[in-house]
Image (cartoon, rainbow, N blue to C red; front, side, top):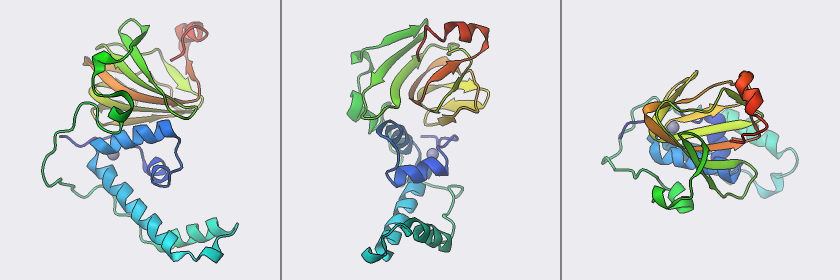
Length: 220
Ligand SMILES: [Zn+2]
């Protein structure tokens, strides 16, 4: 199994480890973790540091200044070792195409899912979660992609099979792309096609002349 080269970044991982993410974002970060030993290690260390801090705080210290106390203590701790050091699993483990925890939501049979066509060569399955962010499994034929777009909120895309390329780089299995309202991009599926999990928090806005025309009609 190759190690992914695009990761969620510290902010998302800290929020994940602290339970501060919504269900859809947690699902996509957890699915990335299933494919990424580096981020698994980082999250384990974050959880260990968080647990140690909780143990150190006396119950009567928990008051409105608690956050300041925790932040001050975080400063006292040495920086977490980064994922740059080699991580070798004891034994290579074959990860299924749809890893846990995604399988818990949609099972493992892609053909049993109710695919909805968004545009020629692009289909999706909505994944019900308990928050307002939208989680979807997306399947794109090679060379296909949505028009140029930006987002009002956060867009997270995790490649499960195949890959895609956009202005930010090439993304393969396990890679997580993080987009926000500062990113205007047009992902295009690689020739072998792309299966990915996408979480969008906020509306997607198509840009360019065609995109502006399609905006009222298409909701990705
Ligand atoms: Zn990672």
